[in-house]
Image 1 (tube, rainbow, N blue to C red):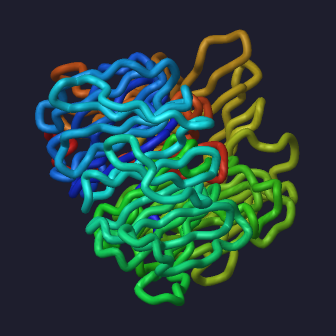
Image 2 (tube, rainbow, N blue to C red):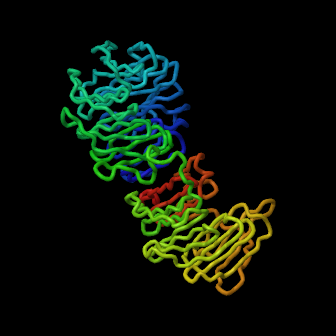
Length: 539
């Protein structure tokens, strides 16, 4: 089960975890520091001028090493966030870094087909190991500071810190040591192999479906191995010579670039989809908020109308096929998934009103109000004419708004009585239903200024509004969500503490907040739920 997803504004090439601290390298040259428990961002390390391709913590967690497209390697002080030393010498981007267990040597592998061994004290390169191809990965043993393994051209090479090869090469495209350094795991194609560090003897071996395994890592207790193959993560128990599959994690929409365990039961993954996901081992293995592309049609229904309620930890979504999903936000699980009773589904909405789910949709030229719990219609009404631009239940659950390009119609939710009709003065392009009481509607026109109407007073004509609503959502006294810049900002310092990536901004349908969860829905099959803990809101 995916317990939490963190969206970052850039591609996540790599991550490293030490205790409750996560370091994530970005395409913009920054290293983002996250709290593994809360998921909140605690710091940003700036210094590289090119994309950060690799990060790794020292064994004691006091230092961080990074490599970048700017051809440099940097050593950081984790506590202060400052650069301790910069190592220059590579002629091409650095793709992998590692630091020895005694923190005396840093190894870096590069596209320039070399491994550099840097003396931390003198900042000088003490040895250069020539390779016949790009150096993809490099790792020091946590147990033996003289033992180094590199990956080049799908071959696994073993070295000492004097630059001498210690064992014959073998197949491998990625490698990771166990925390005690007694074993290492490597993957090549669909084959994953666990070997003893000292002798090289094979301890366990298994295949990962038909996919190419790209990343692998040990759990902290050494009992599990996580393997990433494209968008999928496989968890294997390797406590015996006959490993068995524990679970499969689905949820990323881009290739997985890095894996790390933050606890014996928590796995963290970074992906090219610009997200970091937290997975809980031993619970439901599927991230139900994302559909497995291998088991569904290639054309997924777009969510044309969404109602998302963060109240009481519940989110509700409806898609263009008329499927309503009720989500338990803390557990990231789909609790219910009732379906509409019409094949002709245009727009719909769902809302939990006094613990009662109500679903409205337009189909067969009718407004249909459905009670899934009782399995019956509350009422139906004919609405011939143009298909709606939007069909929404007001936020207080008292009204239903039907809006097409030339008219706004309003019904009483429970009686079905038609209340008001407004004929706008232009062709409607976009509609916003923003007021907390659900009575106000704002519209955007072609070649005209925006216009708003207030339907709040029963039995009275709607009132035309003269001003547009604010584009901010106040999270508390110090933080706000800016709906024009798609970010969370500190009102006191002006500092941006969260920024939604540019690729997602144009797809936002709605943003809601309940004091703990910020729920962002998109014009796709996804809803992003961000948990903002008290520590994040108060810092």
